[in-house]
Amino acid sequence: MRDYQFWFVVGSQDLYGPEVLGTVAARAAGMAEAMSRDLPYPLVYKVTADCNWQIADVVREANYDPDCAGIVTWCHTFSPSKMWINGLSNLQKPYCHLATQYNVEIPNEEIDMDFMNLNQAAHGDREHGFIGARMRMARKIIAGHWQDETVRGRLGAWMKAAVGAAFSRELCVMRFGDNMREVAVTEGDKVEVQKKLGWQVNTWPVGQLVEEMNAVTEADIDALMETYAAQYDFATDDMETVRYQAREEIAMKRMMDREGCRAFSNTFQDLYGMRQLPGLASQHLMAQGYGYGGEGDWKVAAMTTILKVMGENGNGASAFMEDYTYHLVPGHQYSLGAHMLEVCPSVAAARPRIEVHPLGIGNREDPARLVFEGKEGDGIVVSLIDMGGRLRLIVQDIHCVKPIMEMPNLPVARVMWQPEPGLTTGVECWITAGGAHHTVLSYDVTAEQMRDWARIMDIEFVHITKDTTVESLEHDLFLSDLAWKLK
Ligand code: MN
Image (cartoon, rainbow, N blue to C red; front, top):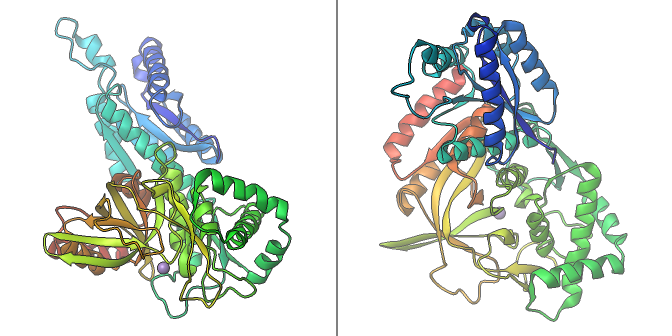
């Protein structure tokens, strides 16, 4: 990860004279410093811009600085917004308009025309907002006092979404094998995705992975087995099988690190020369921040690592997930999520166990995998699909529960949840929108952050909430389809 930072750009004009502009600059610098203490990334005060070229210059600098993940603008005083057109026309970084003001109260005794001249964000930010609307800028707007906890929280959450965008634009995904035969939703236009989201999605032969596995030494495996022992309980005596997963993990990690990849996909249909489908290996790679998608699903692999980055400094709990089966008892309806093997232990409620069981698919030896229950808590599930000509990001609010039964014979990690606005309507909404069976489930990235990310990436966003009905969703999707075709 780069050392990301955000730039605080304050708008004004030269009418006020040096004294007022000096006060604005000093206050803005102090505000940026104070806010940075509560923000996940530094907010660096850059300029109180009073003319066209100063704005154009700071935008140009922001575009060319790979560590600058976005700009935050504000108008303490009035800033005629035609001055912003040349700069904003070239802006390539995420943009947040912080509609705040320096003072929290209107000072009853102190207020006079000098005070009004200095403190006019209420109309300065409207002029600034107009040009954003007029230019159809993709922007985040946050209103409220800069010392307010909620305002700082929302600004911090937006920063994480913007870092997710910066990370996305440099992301490389390693594919081992193609998509599972005949599956549609895991397909997608990789050229369009690279143009829109920046992802470099390329394939490496499974044979090269096998060569890399053969080069792993017993000492390398011993070291990783110690890490496994520190983090997981061994519920098997079959150490050779576990060691084989360690060999696979080391080889995949070496290949990804060498190529600068942060996500990978594989498929049980293409394991030539491998004795086990990677289970524990993929799970422990996900725990280290690598994204993964099963059955060649490179889109969900990339989204998994992006959500892990957006959740940085949170609990890190974002995981590749698959809706598997339902509990449809009236009044107690749940979705059970799992995968054949590959669920990230970051979502585990307790210390995971390493177990070895047969796998009826893929025609390979019994693989070692981590088995655990997912934790309780509110979250989201996220699916990125290719609609042909555009990408759609679907987010659904969910409530994870402690699984309501033990399921002692289920040999995989499992998470159980209730989707909004209830299981059956939620499923109808999800299917109406075309959401995949593969998702990223996250406890610490919010729907608002995913909306911010989708706005920055300029893709369609669909949110299924407690208030969504199938009828309203169908209507929204119909209009959205027209709008995106016109865009
Ligand atoms: Mn799957």
